[in-house]
Length: 502
Image (tube, rainbow, N blue to C red):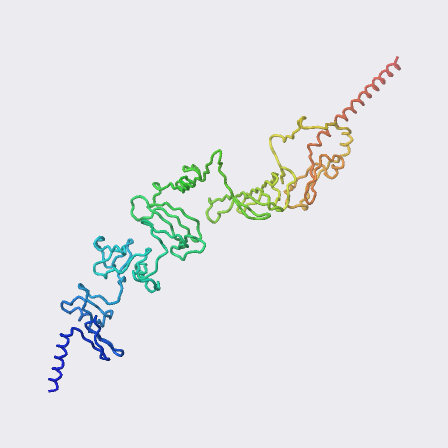
């Protein structure tokens, strides 16, 4: 009898449902909300929806659109039937199966597709029909973002396969036509952007470009190795004959040309030498080596090496250096270095700040006293000529007392004292000459005293010649006068002898 009463009560409830069209299940006895067919209210309990496995879910025959269950395995969660398949409730578009291929987001397991059939205009992506819809997503500043999302944590939504944030922040890149640009900040490729470089490429990276009809092969690139030079490589399949001329241009004009494997032209697009710099009458070519140093520093240098004997003997053989004078940072001098053996070059010649030339002179520590100063011997086939044009001379006076002067000179033989200055290339021969200090007392005009620490004296031996000439002339005059006297005495003697013999 008790079961009959319960059944009767249920029948009354069912008839009531049909009559009222709304059901309220509550703990406080309140009626259903006017907008709900079923209103469940509780502060201590919830609604338990049908639970089943994925296999059981898929076994439901002809599920109604909107049918919902809770799946207990294989990514558990609430699922609803969308009319064509089961979709997990609350999950966004799953991009785990996607990869970025040729700038198109594609499923990894899709080998072929018809792009126009599955193109999504809002996101500018190609998607397969089997994946969830991306209608809630839009492309904002080149980043795929959810349309109704304003804040997010970038790292939580980063998708490595596509390298995009699917629930993300706007990118710093801006689209312009078919390209993109970045107007603020610096860019790093393969590395973190540097604070002092607008573009930083990782060590060993290359900037390359393709031309011709060979697909995606990079034929030419510029690269910088960590310890090597900047490289401009134009190799293509081992051949360079068709790709052997490159121009770097500014404002339409060729400023640097690389032709073949060795010719470089600056200001010309057809160099005929390893380095050719072209200019014109109003703008002649200029090479400038700029240094930054004080006394005795090198401002710049041109070096000459010899690779003939291999790397182990790749020594510097000669160089030309622009240097600063030892005592003044506002001066410039040219120093020439050469090497006579397998050692570093030695300075052989220098043009100093006043245009004086020193050969074999230690100009690092001393100054030149003459316009041309040679630490060694000088030889030649022709004689050395001194200017002696009368038109360049004044206050001309004949030499008097030359013979007396010559008689006061003391010629000597000597050997050089090498201990005084070991930097001077004194030879071991015995020489004939004058002692400058003695000569200066007799002929001060032919002795020069240098403005160096030792007050070194030198002799203009050529200037002694006129004194010798005039001395000979004076002596000849004496001889002729004496000869006349001798002749006269001889005649008188003959006359006396003749008179006595008669």
